[in-house]
Length: 331
Image 1 (cartoon, rainbow, N blue to C red):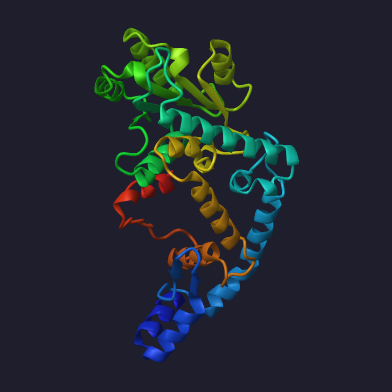
Image 2: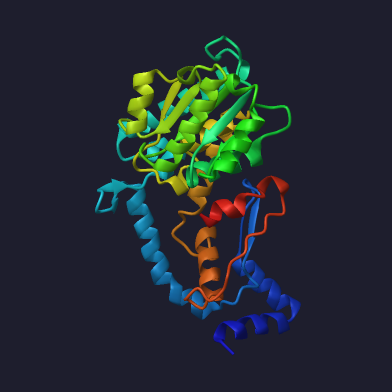
């Protein structure tokens, strides 16, 4: 039997007082956030935790360096700054922090105008639907946001091209028949040159124009400034363009325009969403194993997998709104 198994077996056989002490030692909670984390029944003991401390210390130091602006991708000389999106003051460049704040304000104002019906299509008719075209994190993040945060009767209905399945395109467009001229189409591509979003955009454009719509008056681009998609949107006078910063990866883009825009379009409190993300950032930067929930989870999973990933992790959301959360994490 492995040492880890001995730890859990001893715990299960222990008297309630001993079990309670271990629970107290390994419990993390934050009353303000309403989050409790109990890893006391995971197969790890004091010796394993002590062994992991040097590694976690290095991880804490590396995270601090990344947030301070260290280069994460030497080949492309890119930083990783999705942390700055929910706390612009952390950005090492004050101009970047200001740009983040300006983009958030623009997104909020745009979403409010669309939902209020003051920003309309070319025929001065309010928008009725949103067609979101994005692959990977550019699709899964918005899917999660809309399913988790939209309440009945609030915001606009969302439809997605998150694959290159021709049948999927046809079914989605058929469901929008008669409303394509009042459908806001959002095209998301960080590089602006990814073929999958381009294929979806081409299909959507043909359908909108075939129904008599004005593509440029209904299209929105979310991409890096200066990309091929951004240049096209600027040249054709699309309704709006929002920046997807080069230091934000698709898988961690949910607090950028990729997640904020769908959030405001379904009437969600995205200011609260950003505040919650910032609060979790603070919790998970504590340089101590016992006071850092992310470090505790990492240690528990490391022990459960015997340091080599020998176990499968299953995420089971018990809230209907979070049914897509496991898919989002899986990416």
